[in-house]
Amino acid sequence: MTPAEAAAVYLEWRRGQHLAANTVRADEIVLRHWIRFCRHYGLDDVREADKAILLALAERVRHGKSARGKWSKNYQSKILWTVRDLFRYLHETERILSDITLGLPPLHKSRTLPKNLMNREQIARLLHQPNLSTAEGFRDRCIFELLYSSGLRGAELCALTPYDLDLPGRVLRVVQGKGRKDRQVPVGKVAAQFLAEYLRQVRPVLLKKQRKADGRLFLMSTELLRKRFHKHREAAHLGDIYTVHSLRHSCATEMLRGGASVRHVQELLGHSSIDTTQDYTRVVIDDLQKTHERTAPGNRRQESAFIPFNRKTAAWRQDKKRRKKQ
Image: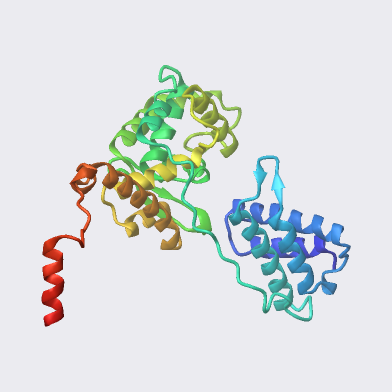
């Protein structure tokens, strides 16, 4: 069985697990690196693989890079984890004789702080870019308000239909989100106002421009969403580091700053593990440290208020004699 054939069988199994399409697509991209590595290494049959080849892959991945620069630690771990999972699957389905992943050092995902958080001033600049006098501009503003209000993923937003909305209750339903999980998400007051106006006045105009029937709420793909975001991001003079996902990050962080519990934010974002949500608390703690440094009474007092302990004073010598007598 060639590496390409093994990857195809594995990906078919992953699709059968009802994972999100983006998850399987990410696995497919990662396994392309593995297939190229096998060609370079001269491995034509996965049944001939051993631990040495996995260790060699780890060394090669450690120096991997793309046009954007060196691969992140998390992306390196993603590649290695996927390849290990591939071999575990091949062993469990008896396509190879032994599990060559046994005894390999464990992989640890680095818990990094989100780097593309947008502050309130940046959010405000972005929100005011769309032209509300055009149907497309009003839709874009409505989308940004909803992403910032409810912390949706871009793919989740694009999959929404009008039937997923309960505007009187200010709740929307996310159907088959990441991990094929459904959840209900609250909608902020401003976002709800934009949604109501969008459904009443704007969406009918956009529907007339469609060449075929489209049941999606915002009538757009994730690719078009990215393009619209990039357009408004550039108009707001924001850096390339910011993406559609930045609004989700910012929503979570603002909620934690406002006093929301980690568990509630986890439910909002649809995280399967609370560990993922706790990454955002590190941002809040970092903010707290900076604020404390700037505002705490002990930090705002002059350095001259500090008096070092002086062992040469008469009081110290007398106290020392008294302690010796005791």
